[in-house]
Length: 279
Image (cartoon, rainbow, N blue to C red; front, side, top):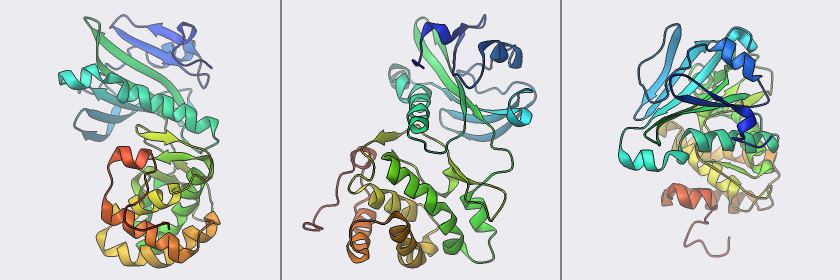
C-alpha cells in the first residue's frame, strides 16, 4: 500500500481528511464514525473514554462496532503553537508511517486503521491515528506492579519484546514498561509494542541497538529496581538475544549509556557511549 494515496483518502464535511489502511474498508470508516472526531480539538465526543492526556496529546477509546472488540483507540495531536503546526509531520503522520514500517518488519504492534488531519487556511492544526484496542491486554508496568515476585522478575516478561525490536532493527525510542502490552494469559509469550511516534529503522541486530534499548528501559523503570535490573534481568536479556559480546562488555556499555543520558537523536542514530574505548 502506498501511504497517503488519493485512493485511500476521505474528505469529511467538518474539514477532517482521513487516510484508511488496508486493515479497514473506507465504507466501514464512514459507517463506524459518521462524525469523525476533530484532531485539532481537546473536547471528547460522546461515548468515548479518556485514556491519557498530555501537552498536545490526547488518547481515548471510542465505540467502533464491527472492528475487533467493537472498540478503537484514537491518538490525537491538537497542535497549538506555530512551531508545532509547521512541523506537523513529526506527530501523528510520523507515528502512522512508523507503525507501518514496524508491521513490515514483523514487529507485533496494534493494527492501525487510519490517519487523519485537520487543516485551517492550509495549515495542519491537528492530526491523529486510529488503532486497534488491545482487548484483555495489560501493559508491563501494571503487570509488574501487581506481581508477587517483584518488579525485576515480572519485567522479564518484556524481554522478548526488546529482543524482537533488536532482531528487526527497529529502534523504538520509548520502549519501556508502559509501552509493552502482554496477553492477559500470564503463561503466554504474546506481546505488542505501542507508541511509535519516534523510531528509526536499521539493519537487524545493529551494533549498540540492544544496549540502547536496555539502558533506556532501566532508566525509566522504578529507581529502586535499577540494581536488580542490572543483574539478573540484564543477564537474561543478553542470553535471549544471543548477543555477540560477552555479558561483561554488554553491562559496561549499558551502564555507560545510562550515565550519558543521550539525546533522542543520539539514540535514534545508535550513537555509542563515549570514553569506553573499543568495547
